[in-house]
Figure 1 (tube, one colour):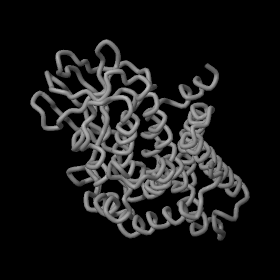
Figure 2 (cartoon, helix red, strand yellow; figure 1 turned 30 degrees about the vertical axis):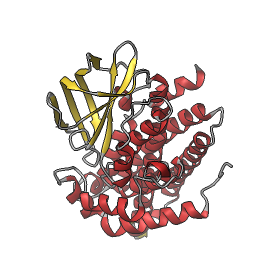
Figure 3 (cartoon, one colour; figure 1 turned 90 degrees about the horizontal axis):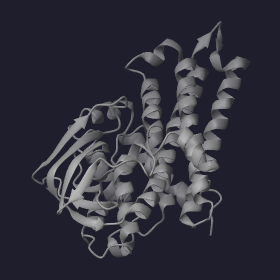
Length: 360
């Protein structure tokens, strides 16, 4: 049954995650987290996995997970987006979705990966589709049981404990690689957004175990999951920009009046609110269509991704403008909203590529 709006259980989950993040992931905590060796707060990640089970939500119970749907992880991701929390959940969620999808496709799949992800092991997929379309050219090849080539950028590829790699052979396959394997080089890549971690991976004769030798369908589904997960983060990011701007407009005075009392600024913040609410509604409709196997799930995902990406960018820009000069200082969070919106904009296909699928 389709949940047209989040249920009470979803709301309670969001409240639990928000309460934790309000305590453990405020502005100063985010700045401390990005300076850690892993690029995120490992203690907070352990708490999220141990107390709330965020990494286990969409993993089947028989594989060590909680047995929920993708919608519950969507709720968590939106809260992480609102808090601007550096977190490997996006990477691990995409990886677990690929493994769950492969269960019926490959008898050779390692059986210990999903339980490890559910417990909090950081996982990622080295695949050009992370920043492109599902059919983006793969830069790694598999021959004679080993991988050669390079993949970049890879979400948290430098710290991942579980690594899957999309590689070309007769087609495109998905392979499991030991992150400590000989011939594998992992280098962190700096980016605009300090709250997201990326790396470049080089493979020089790295042994790999097949997950699925024909992974075309699997990767297409995984791309949709990643698209929806990114949309959730974008909705949260836009909500953070709106909240900050409204609060600032109530406090900052000009000509003896709060900025929020000026009609022209009210209109601009009202437009921001519309973008946030439309993005949230579209993303929720898309995730429900995916969960329930609706025939238009692909189209709804593309529409939601296109709108959410552009809305996050627009709200972030308005956040900068309506805060004035303080927004371009390092001490203020406005630049983090802007950088997060810019980085998420690049994941799983640009808006014009998403719209192209709607008319193809």
